[in-house]
Image 1 (cartoon, rainbow, N blue to C red):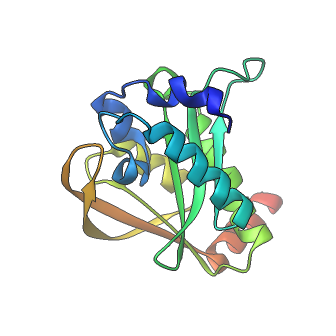
Image 2 (cartoon, rainbow, N blue to C red; image 1 turned 90 degrees about the horizontal axis):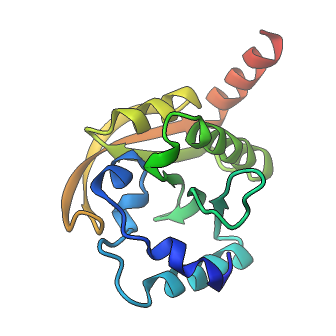
Length: 175
């Protein structure tokens, strides 16, 4: 992620953009304050370099300067957590599902993690469906403060265990 991404990252989000993402709106402030994009880029570079996060920017093929979203894996409170956020202009195309599936594969292939976590606002059906399509199971609710909305929000927690991922992967290979 380059500093030249700052204008794209700072583009003011609308409330729909935040409702699609998994976990990401918990930490994304709205409106985006001055300097926050640069801080995000720096934290991302440090985390990616240290191996504590894997944050990727999503761009369409052939348009590397056009940011349409992002996807990541982060260690949060000792748990590996999947997050994603995509622009409403690309909802329904499959970018979130494809990106989430790729990071699930990376998490279980490249690490020894036993459980992968994620979550969505309870009223966010699209994002719930993305997590279900890639194999997550919902297992409860938590109340978390959302920087994006400036208030606590009820979040549906989801998880995927390694043995479920292996069984799913095996059934996809034989089916």
